Image 1 (cartoon, rainbow, N blue to C red):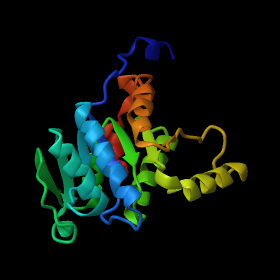
Image 2 (image 1 turned 30 degrees about the vertical axis):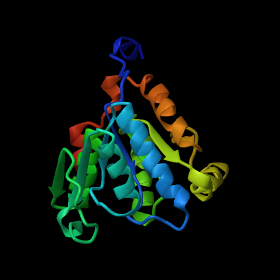
Image 3 (image 1 turned 180 degrees about the vertical axis):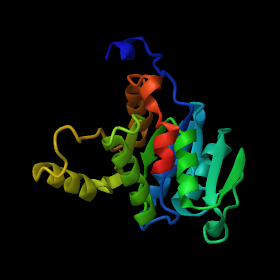
Length: 210
């Protein structure tokens, strides 16, 4: 613990990895939130790392960052190039061999993670980050944008797991929740300021085994 007191504290978020759907959903509020968050990121000087598609929520957040002068990096596996219409290049579209390489690059480039409404892929990416955090592999902040209560069923399930001690003391993790777009960046900034650089990232040897 003494070593943590002298470690450099990360006081700025340079890039956020945003997980969200390649679809728009049925409620216009979801795309509106993605657009608002992308705009807020760009105005704060924070770059976007995302799945690389130009459809649905992914397209909305990337377009908003770009239109407001922000940095956009899309990362997409080869087999999804046509399916998700990877048309936005931003600072560069990175094409990977597979999903594992994609997720590793997204992790490496980001200082924090935000999950907006989405489908199974969004859920899988979020849960993987929570699992890595639970196992002590990294301490980058993870936040769910609970737009119109979208993530409440997941929150209820996590509470249920804790109540039944499948998530036991010592195996807990911090999951930030923001109901409003304007609360996302302040919550992330507050969280990241307490994380020493020495324990923030996942060791390369550990990542290669996951």
